Amino acid sequence: MVWNEVFEIEEIDIFGRRGKLYTRRGVVETPTLTPVINPSRQIISAKRIKEIGFPMLITNSYIIKRNYGDLAKELTVHGILGVDGPVYTDSGAYQLLVYGKVEVSPLEIFTYQIEIGSDVGVILDIPTRRETPFQQARAEVEETLKRLREAAQVDRKGMLLVAPIQGGVHTSLVAYSARQASQIPADLYAVGGPTQFMEEYDYEEVVRLVMTARLNLPWGAPLHLFGAGHPLILPLAVAMGVDVFDSASYALYARNNRIITSRGTLRLQDVEELPCSCPVCSKYTARELRELPSQERVELIALHNLYVIWEEIKRIKQAIHEGRLWELVEEKARAHPALTNAFREFLRYSEFFAKIHPSTRSNPRGIFFLGAPSRYRPEVVRHVNRLKTRYKSRSDILILFEETPQKPFTRFGLIKEFLTNAMSILSEYDVAVISPAFSIIPVELDGFYPLSQYEASRLVFEEAKDEILADVVWFILNKAYRGVVLAYYSLPSKFVRKMGNKLRDEGVIFMEVSLPSYEKALSEHEKTSKKILDAVAILKGMITRDRQEALSP
Image (cartoon, rainbow, N blue to C red):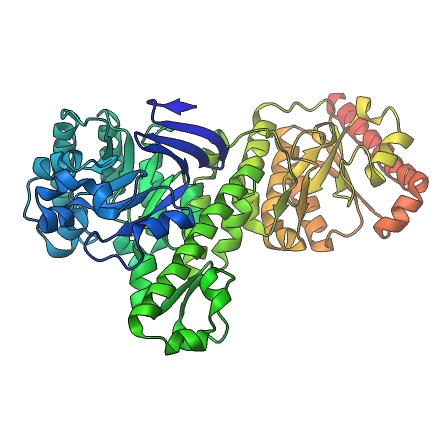
C-alpha cells in the first residue's frame, strides 16, 4: 500500500506497520525514532547518532533562526548539523507550550524551514494544554487548521508537510482536528501534546489521544507522535499505528545521570551493574562512570540511552515481521502499573484492530496467550465475530470437548481418536472444543490459522474462566442446540456446574462425561469414545421424547 507517493506500508501487525517514508534525501524505514538535536548544543554529534542507526534526525528551526538567522539559508540545516541524510525540523511549538509565546509568525517560520533545506517540516501549531477549557481549545484547534491551510498553499520545494493534530483531553476535538486535517493536502500527520501526559505517566490518556487521531485519519498516511521516546511506551504506540517518534529523552535523562533501560529508567547512583552490552556498558562499570568528569559522563550515558532506544526500535520491527507485536506490548505492559492501565484502555479498541490486522501471514507462526488480555487479540475477536455471522449448526446436539494438549485436534490426540472411532459422528452431530484462548472452536475449523497454532498458559483460563463460560453458553444458545454432551478431564467442577445450570435454565439438556486423567482417557480411547457415544444416545433419546410430548395433544 502506497499513500500519496510518500509512504509505503510493507507489513502490518495489529495497527503497527513496517513501512518506508520517502524523502528527497533518502528513504526512512519505519517505525523509527528521530532523536532531537539542539543545533546550538549537541551532547552527541548528529553524525555519531546517524552511525548508531537512526535514519532521520529532528532539530528546531526556531532555535536555528534565533542563533543563525539568514546565515542558515546558506549553511542549510544539513550543514549546521553536519549530516547528509533526511532532517526533520520542528517549528517552535514546544517553546510555545513551555513559554507561552514565540517571536516569529507562523508563515515566517514555515517558509524558513523550506529555505534552510528541511526535508520534513511542521507548521507552528498551538499545542493543547491539559488544563485548557473546551472552548479555548476549540479556538486553538481552528487556528492550527487555519495555519495548516496557509502552509499547504506554499511551494515547499520538495519538503514534506506535517499536519499536527491537537485537542488534548477533549477527544471530540481531537477527532474533529484529524478529520479536518485529512482534507488538507499534507504528507504526514502528527499527534501533538502527549509530552504533558508522558511526564505524569498518564499513558491511558496517551492511548485515548492517539487512537482517536488514528481512527479519524487516512489509514495509509504516516503518523508521528510528538515527544515520545522511552522504550516503555514505544511498542504500545506502534501497535496503535504510530510510525515516527521524536524525543530528547536520551540527553535530558543523561544530564540527570539517569540510564534508560527497556523496562524503565535507573539513577546511576543506584546502579551496581550496567544493564546492557552496548559499547558504553561493555567498556565501563557503573562505578567508573560515576567517577568520570561530568561532561564525559553525560555524553556516555546519552550514548548508552540512544543504543537502548534504537535496540527497542529494532525489536519492534522484528516483532511486526514475526506477527508478535501483541506479545511484546503485553509483556511491556507488565513492566509498569501505568502501562498496565494504558494496556487496558488499549483493549477497548480490539474490534478496530480486528478489521485491519492481517488474516494470514507469509511466515505464519504460533501465537502465545500469556493471560486474559491476550484474548483481546485481533485473531480472537475476528474468530468470535465469524462464529456469530458465518457458522451454521448442522445438528441440535453438540459434543463438546475440553481442549487437549495436541493440535490440530482432528489430527492428534483424544479428539482425533474419538472421531476415528465414530466415523459418522461429524455428519450427524457437531463437535467443538472449549479453548482458553478462543473460547470455542468447532473441530471443522481447527485447520484454519491460528486456531491450532497457539499456546496458552494456565493463567489464561484462571483469569478469564467467566468470560470463556459466557462465550460457550452464548455459542450454544445462538446456534440453537437442544442438547450438549461435555467430555472433560480437568475442568474445575464449579465451571462445569455453572455451565450446566446456565444451559438448563435456558431449556438445553446438558450431560457431562467426566474422564479420568487425559493420559488414561487417551490410552483407553475406544472405551472413552463408547462412554461419550452412550451419553449422546441417551441425550438423543431425551430430545426425541421431548419432541413427541410437545406434539402430543
